[in-house]
Length: 444
Ligand code: PLP
Image (cartoon, rainbow, N blue to C red; front, side, top):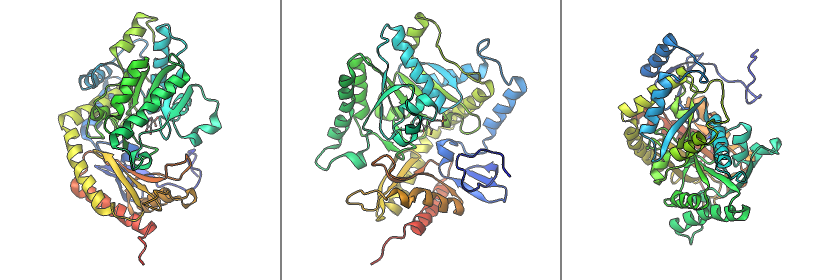
């Protein structure tokens, strides 16, 4: 009997024993193509010798030194590398152990920034519906899935939610893309004014929404307008690139595509690439200086901050991405994948939308393409699809049901950056079989 407390208490899972390139192999010898990189984590696949060697080397020299007393070479070098390639204005890096921790750190930093500027009344965060920012209490408070939050209320942070930028479901037929982007961005201004000009500390959003909507980028112009509004009202812009960052979208930092720079940026997943748990919060010199010249102390911390072995892994992952120009490869393979997804699924009667950037793609399923009507939650479509694909040897990441109103079933694809065209084609073939076995097109 297993003594592990699994997330789902129903059913059992195979035991994963080894990794080889884009594949995970279980105890029975069965191979699974990692079409979702776990949950957009394993960007370099499962057997990168440079990262493994870097971890071993660090372990041989020093496993751990508490950051109260020491910094370490891998942490310093990783931070410098992140900043050398970061969007304009980001100057400091706070290393943590994962995505939720990065988001918690960002919320606390935003609050402390305003308190130290003599604006303690700025305690409100504005976030977006149908977003995901992590599972710890602060990150959960800003996340936009009510069903995830409800049983833990009241949560710690004062939050309100505005609409996401979700063109497929929300743009009306008589609206241009540009007008749509401005309309939803302007919801931020309306909410700031509703709460009071001096009440809001930060706005948080994912540049490409991942876990809750399946790779939904904002329309052009949306984030530029968001940046303008934040500047006008002294609200910090926090961009959560935990899932979409580190090259996943064909840009090292996803917000480069939207031509905006945040005040605070969160990354994780692809930074450790699954080899070590590591995340980071980056902030501007202005935010850092406020704390440095004020109390001089960020009132936050965890024992494993800037862990040298995790930092060595992050440094090796980032060097790999940069030295091999994997970001260009993501763009090129991404174009190939997009073409194949559209060829196979664009005309499928139950596929409503195919969207994404780079090697980050979502397929949304609807029961009626004209009305964009999602399948009812009891159909449990995405989970069923995922199960059939898994049995056939494909990992893809499902989001199922209409628990939060509009978002229905979708499948997220986030294969490793190293996947060859043949492997991507194999992934599309397996997915097509799974879709056709669960959702056979109706023939009359
Ligand atoms: N933020 C985003 C956008 C995410 O997608 C996730 C995880 O899926 C998180 C935060 C939380 O990251 P972690 O699971 O590493 O705590």
